[in-house]
Length: 289
Image (cartoon, rainbow, N blue to C red; front, side):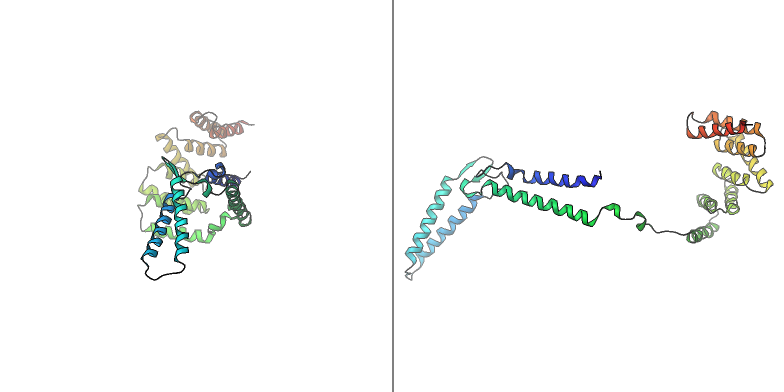
């Protein structure tokens, strides 16, 4: 079930909470405070208006044949209004009410239900016809970058770094970019530049040694081995150095050396980890006749 269908349920609950005073109302019972009108204030205003009209009629000098009839009607209306005001019952914290002046309950409930149904149905139809957020393709908002644009950006970065030879993080990013672009010679040159500025940077040593071990030039391969062996003298438990040297020994046919290095690596890895399982599989592969 898609979570979005919970929204109509939430909408109905909100509407029920809004209209529940109307549903709880019984016939001529008053609405709760805040939903009814202030009848006392309204009737007092009508009283002042009627008194003002009677006062104006008394001040008129010109005789009016309809004055007596009009005055009688105003006096009757005023008397009825005063009676309603006198009969008005109030309690502390509750607004004034007159049961006969409030519409009956069934009409209120019917109107409330009609409004709720209209809002719920309209919302549901809009959702169905306008679709869900999943219809928007995620990739439409993400510009696609082709290989040529990537190469252009890398070359621009290389030009900037030529003017900033001490920007070690920038040179490391450039070297990794060359690796991703399958330009090992350029990557090795970038890593070499880093090591001329910061010879003890372990990440650069390991990355350059890995590239050299996979090079076709035997001198490069030997250089990579020497880098890793030197690194192990300073960091005997460096996992990447042990792994790379073990793989190089196996490729060169030295299974004993490969097993020794990989067993050292296995001993320092967390038991049961993915890395430990990978090393165990490599050891089993080497031990196969």
